[in-house]
Structure formats: structure tokens, C-alpha cells
Image 1 (cartoon, helix red, strand yellow):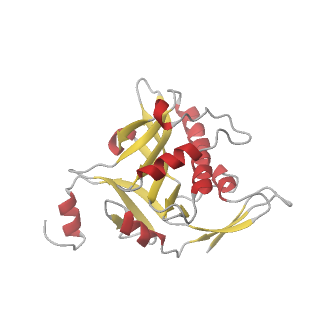
Image 2 (cartoon, helix red, strand yellow):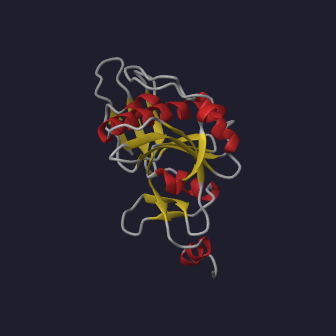
Image 3 (cartoon, one colour):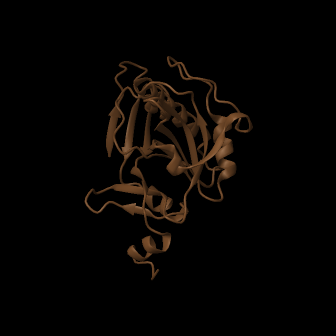
Length: 230
């Protein structure tokens, strides 16, 4: 168990206990349409497979206007907090399915960059994706963010490979909110504000994950994992 204490002192301090021994990765394995890969050398690090030679997951995406690299990174951090806030609002016993809302960053032209939101899900959870988008907050205190429009207005559908770098932060797995970030967020990160209210203490499952795409067919990957012949 890892305990995070936010830097705000006094009655508004947040305390988050991260449960690293959660069954969440195994639940994710049962629900995700592609294999979840255990890292052979790094204990408790999982690769979430998003694309192969013959199959690629798509996402609902909301791109922001092009900007410089540093500005895109700063806004991406704020978007991660927004996504975590929406996921925390939505998670609960009635949310069956698996969705992975993420932030992406890709270079466009002439050293300009685009960041935005990408919501991935398994094949039966697209309605949960829509519910998440409708639940996203319009703002986060202290951060200037564009208003996220309804799905039918400007959201697009794109494949994983087109999104550049994808950063996983949180997921909803059969109603449970799970932290997926590979690296531990800083104590004053906006993600912590999304996971608990000021002055409260909470336990959150944490599964270290990284997005992965492999230049192999699904059958070849399954054979390598010992699930039969290609």
C-alpha cells in the first residue's frame, strides 16, 4: 500500500492510499478486447494492448487547437485532472463495463502539437463512454480549460495509432475507479483532487499500466501467451 498526502496542510489535506495488490488487472484482462501483457522484467507493470497488425481499438476523441509543445503538455496535465474528475463522478455499482479515458499528444506540422481527450472502451461499453463524456466537468478550479462539448458536436472517432502518445490515468472497471498511471503523479497533481474531497481519506486501486501496440497478429500474440496455435 502506498500513501499519498497532498501538500495542502490543515483540514483540507487529502490522503490517498493506493492499493497495489488489487485484483483490478485481472478484471481488466477479462473485459478488455485485446490481451493485457505482464512486463517480464518489471513487477506490477502491465501493457494494455491497443493495436496489432490486424486489429486496432478506436476512441472517441476531442482535439484542442494546435499549440506549442510546452503549452500542450501543461494543458494535457489539466485534461488528465478533468478526465479523472469525470470518471470519479461516474464510477459506481451501476457502471458495468470497462472504459479507459486518456489524454493524447501528437505532433502536427512545423513543431506544433495537439492535445486532447480520447475515451477507449471494450465492445459492450460504448454507452458508458457517452455517459462519461456527458459527466465531464466544464472546468477545474484554478485551471483555464475549454468547455467540453456534447458528443454529437465536435467529438470524433480515431484509431489508437493516429493519436501519437497516449497517457493513461484512470479507468472504470465494472463500476470501480482505478488509477492506471505508470508514473506516480506529484502530490499536488490535479488527479488527486479528482479522487477525493478536501479533508478526506480514501483508498484507490492502482495498477501501473502503459499503452502498447505490437506488430503481430492477434493469433500470434495469443500463441505467444500460450493460448493455442496461430
